[in-house]
Amino acid sequence: MKKISRSELKKELRRNEIREVLEYIRVSLKERRENVVLVVIVAIVILGGGYIYFGYQRSVQAEAVSLWREGTNSFQAMLMSGTDGLEGEQAKMHYNRAVDNFSKLSSGYGGEHLSGYARIYLGNSHFYAKEYVKAISEYNNYLQEYPEGIYSGLARKNIALCHRSNGQLSEAARMFLELLAEKPWGVSVPECKANLAAIYSQMGRKAEAARLRREILAAGEDKYWVLREKAK
Image (cartoon, rainbow, N blue to C red):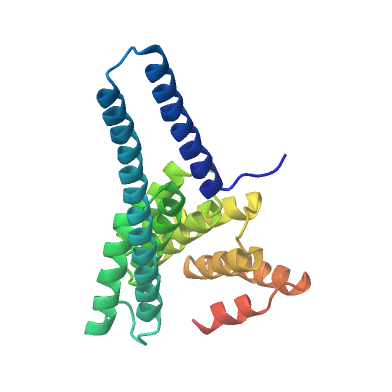
């Protein structure tokens, strides 16, 4: 079956609406059931209302795309500011702009297709700003709305990282163990193992940490994660 795009579907619905109005005019005039002027007025109202609605929708979509671009640009600028967290006025400005835009989009403005992405980016904005409690809240909101969403694994991994950064090591370790058992899409096994090894080191479980690092190296998995965690 040929896949119909959203734009094609809207056009077809619009054509059907026009056909129904024309048929209403034809039948009404033929059977003389309605005043001619009234029939024409009704037709104009229906068609005009439809054009106003679709025009409004196009306007909303255009603004949503603009908000998305501004939000992602601000997010990238925040990361490139070269500061730690929200140190510096530039970083704060980019962070606030990203949060404002993603908050509006995550509420459903511009369509559901942007809402999930915006929710993840909103969580990421808080995460890289070291606003870990806010980040956890947004990631959990995403998981509630999209439990099987494409970014559910990423959201869970970042929640675990937030717990680690907040010193909640037992909860972070539990979540990384779950991720290693389930291996959700988009989550790096070596990264999870390296983070878990680092958490075990912080908890004084040196032998378990060393075992995980050996597993990464023995399996030929990406050494970057072992080196990165050792450098911290």
